Image (cartoon, rainbow, N blue to C red):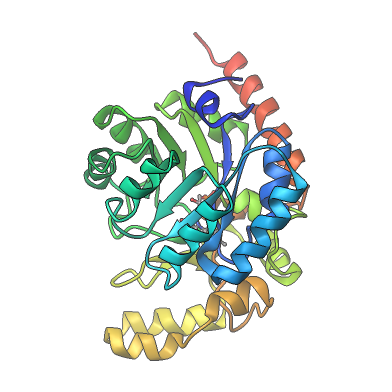
Length: 312
Ligand SMILES: Cc1cc2nc3c(=O)[nH]c(=O)nc-3n(C[C@H](O)[C@H](O)[C@H](O)COP(=O)(O)O)c2cc1C
């Protein structure tokens, strides 16, 4: 299956595994790219040294294209971009910051640049900054979210109508039906997080994966809505923070409750009680841990079946 975007990226299927802190290391990125999609390394939880290691492992394991996600608020963002450029990486997905920050420099090095947004207003800024594509991420998505809380069903077609660059749909896609919906609403590719976080190659802890399989869709909540909206599974930690939010805690009080390293503790170290378990709403409908290649294969089969049985 070929779209102009998949041709431009040199991939067989327009399926991208989103960069995910503590979950998308080189094993997952390589598995997705080897299966015909595009695997992104999540540099948001990596120091430049750790990223260099992941890049070397990835580049030594596949000749398929591999990209990198760079959350621009991350303390090592600029250094990590340089490390990736030094390793010959040509595909950058930036997020959580201004698309103007690094796009010109990356384009001058011949790179493909996409930037993640939660609204039409920001999508227009991405286009104006000279990015090659925009990732439109609905509020269903796992991890950090926009303040706007716009759902995928509303966001994707609105962004597709507003910009001329290709739109990559994200937020709530876990199977071929979701992919078909995204493509019908104007997307040229899909970026999938939660479904790939719950695969064998994901570096997330087994406890995290087990908790996500058990979670119902109602157990996945958006919290910190006023200063850093994040979607995660409700546990003791989240319950305390949400109660504090509801009783009007100040940002300073919330920051004190959060402390540091909650995402690492939850996703990577497997503390499902006191860690932050970032995941998307769609986790409520996921009940197995397949390989990443199985996810790609099932998604493509499901996509074709869905499109074939649509009434005309
Ligand atoms: C555990 C987890 C960590 C994430 N970390 C990041 C990140 O570091 N940078 C980023 O741009 N997006 C991050 N995301 C968002 C994904 O890249 C992707 O856009 C999103 O998960 C898509 O929605 P879905 O979860 O419904 O598939 C994360 C998502 C999850 C589930």
